[in-house]
Amino acid sequence: MSASEAVPQKRPRPLSPHLQIYRPQISSALSIFHRITGCALAVGSVLLAWWVIAAAAGPAAFENAQWFLGSWLGILMLFGWSAALFYHLCAGIRHLAWDAGYGYDLPTMQKTGYAVLIATGVLTVLAWIVGLVVW
Image (cartoon, rainbow, N blue to C red; front, side):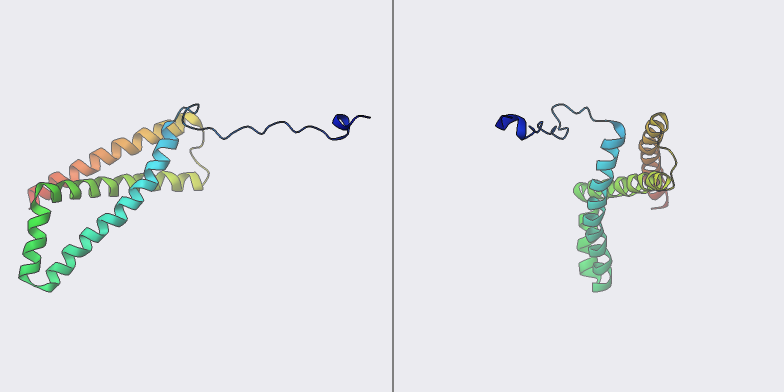
């Protein structure tokens, strides 16, 4: 028996799929975006905490916070934070359904993925419309 026959040769293990060969799907993209919006909510919550602390600190601090939040950058940040909030909420409900064992078949995954995107848009726009009417 030769040395090559005595030691079985190992086949090279396949590499994990990477972006050059893996075609992203809506469920994977939305799952990643769910994590990103969770981080965005944490950062946006600091902005919200600043506003609340400024309100407690006195009129001058609150006026500065209100000025920033009323600027185009502040409004853009608040809009992004609210969109992240509604996306994370809707995607979280979808993940809860998965945890309960529902919605794993591909057609349902795609439908619920698009439903999350549509619900995010509708809820964000409705919240801003109601906010502008009340304000």
